[in-house]
Image (cartoon, rainbow, N blue to C red; front, side, top):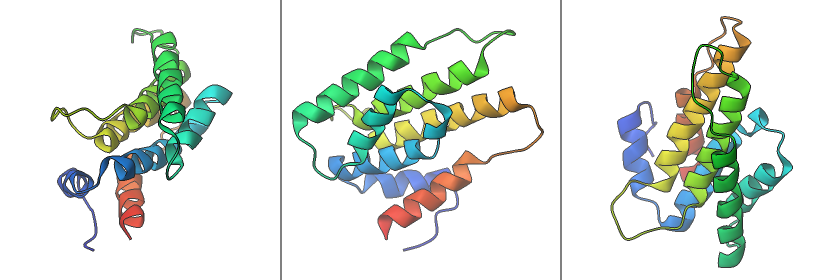
Length: 150
């Protein structure tokens, strides 16, 4: 297995995974930012996504929970935005992406969508912290994908 060092390599690796593996990988990618939420319902949804073979009804309930939290936490960005609330919104959006029912259309992979939402969550948190520390979520994701594929 080659090292993953950019988004193209990561996306290509993700494309090779089946729906269950995409969900579990998406959940691991969300796990990297789950510390940005304290919502117990969202944390349970993320844990459900990480399970190897949960019942379909459990996955559907977790998806509805994550999607509902994403909708409820949606806020418009602006100069007075609550960046930590925004971060939680994107954690919920990433969780919903990982848990979304697989459709027959070619609208992108759940794991890739979860990764992009997780990056936005991390960026929001960095803005709020304003401590000049850069936290490279993309590099962390490359490592998560490499580890998952082993």
